[in-house]
Length: 132
Image (cartoon, rainbow, N blue to C red):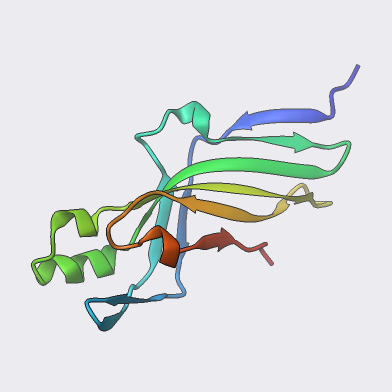
């Protein structure tokens, strides 16, 4: 019997959001530069995983990632900011979407951000929009 469901582990992820976001810090607005997204190496590799359900043509994935802002971190460092402000932001991305005819995916979903002194929870949110 053929099982239409495939479970997988995510072992590598390198992404860059080139469209900058504007951050406000100490009353000043900064262009954050590109956002780098990588798998969080401090979380067990098994934590980033997903499921492909070909019977429903539906994919789900959970990624434990770090979000870093290298240009903005360099700016903060040059201003003498505390080292904790330049550390990556940890997050969990939970996304789902259709399995397309060419076997690619159109995933989107929410992003739970970890604690970070620069990005207070009540004022910060993130999500993944479907690809084009």
